[in-house]
Amino acid sequence: MRRWIWFNALALVMFGAFLLFILLQSIFGWQVRNEELAQYGHPADSYWTYLGTGHFVEAVFENWESEFLQMGSYVLLTAYLVQRGSPESKPLNQVDRAEDYREKAGPDAPGPVKSGGLALLLYRNSLSIALLGLFVISFVIHLLGGTAEYNEQQAVQSGAPPISAAKFLATSDFWFQSMQNWQSEFLAVGSLIVLSIVLRQHGSPQSKPVVKPHAHTGE
Image 1 (cartoon, rainbow, N blue to C red):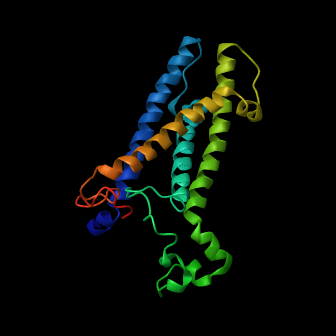
Image 2 (cartoon, rainbow, N blue to C red):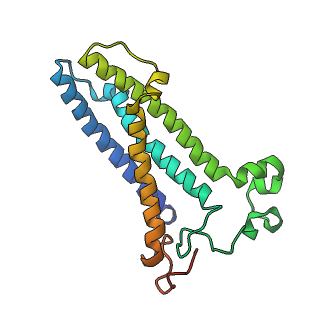
Image 3 (cartoon, rainbow, N blue to C red):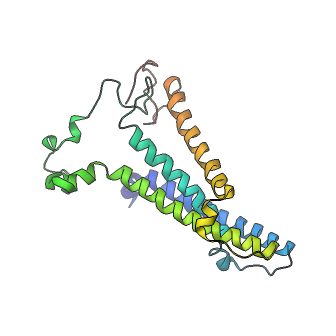
C-alpha cells in the first residue's frame, strides 16, 4: 500500500485538494445563497437542495470550463509551437518525435499503437481530444446552470418569466463569466512559459535543470 501511495502521490494530493476545496466551495456557496434568499424573504435551501441549484452548478462548471480549455489548448499548441528557452516547449529543431511513430513501438506499446489505422489516429490525439471534450461538456453544463441561476434570480427579485438557454447564451452576463476565467487561465500558462526561461525550481519537471543556460529549450 505504501508503495502504491508513493507511485500515485501526485494524483492523490491533487484530487484530494480538489475534493476538499469543492466541499468548502459548496458550504460557503450554500451560505451565500441562503443569505441572498433571506434578503428577499424566501426560505433557506437545505444543503442537499443547494447542490442542485443553478447557483452551485454555474459556479463549479464555469471554472471547470476554463481549466479544460486552457489545458486542452496548451497540449495542442505545444505540439506545433515553440518558445525559445522554455522547458514547456519542445526543442526548437524538433518537428516530430521518432517515438510517436508506430515503427518505433516496442512489445509493451499500448493496444491502439499495435492495431494501427483509425484507432492509432485517435490515440495519437487522444489527450487533446479528451481535454477539449471535457471543455465542451463543462461549457454546456455551465450554460445550463447559468440559465437556471439567472432565472432563479429574476424570479426571486422581480418575478420575471424564465428565459431559455439559447437566450442566456446571447447575454453579456454569460460571456462575462466565461471571459473572466478564460483570460486568467491563459495568463497563468503564459507566465509559466516565460518565467521558466530564466527561473528554476529544483526537482520540478516544469523547470529546466538549475545548471542549464537560459537559452536551453525543452526538457
